[in-house]
Length: 168
Image 1 (cartoon, rainbow, N blue to C red):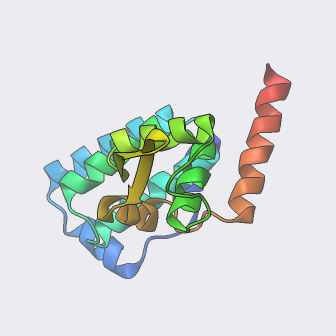
Image 2: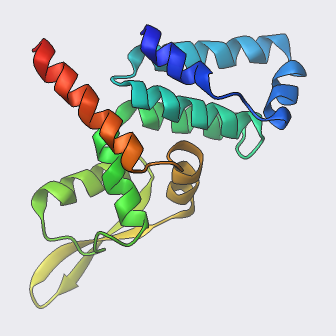
């Protein structure tokens, strides 16, 4: 927990975000604190604490409203960190819209259920197959939560996995 809190607090907020927090209604600030504390304690990795910070920053910089912040925070709590890479790959056109692989299809179905992409069944000569499409909410989620999903983040995820395997 201490490492997650440290990662959350490491990079300072922008001036705009700091001003937003300073001017925030005390009741709303308390709600924000509750959301953050709950999310950090539930996070399965240090990396997720960084994503929670990114989301909080997006809210404090007024890129998203309170309702969207709460919805994205809920979604972030539902997704494992390693699955976020698949979502980003899909939005970067690195995964086909008409996925044949069953495991990837299951992930995409889950993302669609969370509202991060659209899903339709396509009927053709071969039968019925799923077709996944990008949507604005999914793009906004990626922009706010995982704009920095890069090799360094992936290395940290792998380090966390090794630590977990040693623990088990």
